[in-house]
Picture 1 (tube, rainbow, N blue to C red):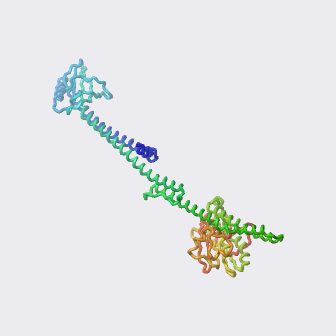
Picture 2: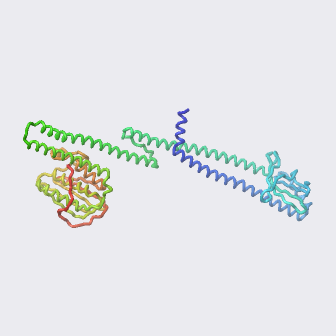
Picture 3: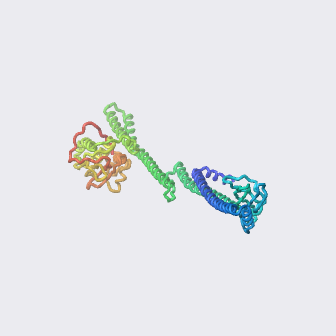
Length: 488
């Protein structure tokens, strides 16, 4: 018994059931008003018809009295009273109350209502079809204090009222039953779908991130809620997977440099020498290794800030031409030192809403990667141009290095991912991850294409501010500002 009652009580406390009861109340109220109007219209119409008929009879009897006197009125009342199958009621009395003519045996003991109309009981059994007989009549006084009462038997109308009331009660009862039943069914259906959502959330809280809310396919509010929850769960799963991968990658990629750093320090401690140069060399190598570790953590923090959107509130108009000029000025000596050629071309003075520090770091990372993986004598180009319709600007870095295979171009945007050909060079695989995070923060698009030979990477910004076209320019020295490239 308790097992049956508990789900019912839980269902009665649900919001869908309460809403169903509210709508049921409104529906019952509206049905009641309609039925009341129907009843008043039907019964009222019949009463008006009877009242008009009685008024016509009274007018005829008054004409008879005026034309033929009291004797003519008495004869007319007698003739009408003894007519077969009549449902009219007549009574004519003297001033003292003696009956002169009519089909009532006494004057009704009731007080007239509005307009002189009276509704009274004639007999417990009688009238048409042996039903309780009631009458509605009007009385008036004739000259000489003679009183005349004219009315109609109302038993048929009373019976009609009774049947109407019974029918209305049945309609009302059926409406309530169907409304409650329909409310329970609707609430149960809604609760079943909501319970599926609760079951999925409990599954997620238990640690299973693969659970998803099933959709009914009707496209209603619950389906839209399920879609939003599933999208949120997909995002949470991606973030958790990314966090797990980052944790594993950090543990794997930092273990080697930390072990190497510890080994150097330990070796310096066990060496039996008084030569200060030995210790100086160990300390310098330790500082270099520590700087690489700090650079890795700095890059991870920058990526986390960009991906979390924490810098989105700091977005302001930024001149991309100044960012490109500064990056070119800082990396041109690096390229010359490696025997490479770095050319910079600015075809548009574009302004975008963004974070200047992160944009500068992204362009610096692209140049750093291009210089790192381009052989001696190679060529690197940095281009800023106005993009097409709906795009504000495009920053492109192209090199003549080994490039990236098409099937790896999405993979290299992940953290700590490095190609086999790049493992011999310094870096930790975070450079392009930071560029991708900065691009997504600014609503930009990152494109990797084949430069034949080499790689062409384009950073395409949305059209927040239309670029102003300018002639080709060479990079000039920018005063102030620093760019720190993340090791890639």
